[in-house]
Image (cartoon, rainbow, N blue to C red; front, side, top):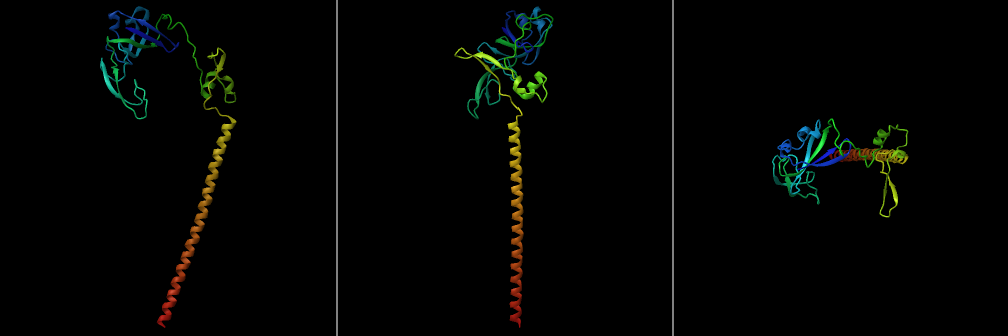
Length: 240
């Protein structure tokens, strides 16, 4: 079985092949997210603690968290489920996945270093891989370089240089997210002014409507009163 070990602290990963069944007994019948003592896998891992993060069986089917068996099953998966990517909106598909319990039928087992041991593992903990991309969000850039709000974040963006298809050296920088610029503040003021203008317009329209409504009520009241007075005068003439 191959062990694909990743170290988040250094950004490296290494594949180690172990054929000794006695050593592999330490990971058998364990589930995804459980921890394994490194000393059980070999003396070179003394002091290390690994966490099982997944794996693939010999036919290439991935392990899925929550499937508590040691074999493959066919599950109806939808958007948001692991081991499946939706191609069309509302689509569901039945796919074969491997259970989350480690067994002898696995070809690759993924492990993550949780605690580092006494000795370094060559190619895993003794080298440091730089991050390929820097932060994009303005506050994250400020935190990375300990900047204040008055400092210009745009001059501290991590640029990346590479060669394009023509062989020319080109530099790229990410678009800064949540950057407060004078244009953004101007647009915010404009949105606020439009909202206030719409509110004032609505208040004026409401006042005009209420004025007209009260006028119509008054006219209707006067009309009714005049009709009643005419009827009474007509009745009094008839009685006389």
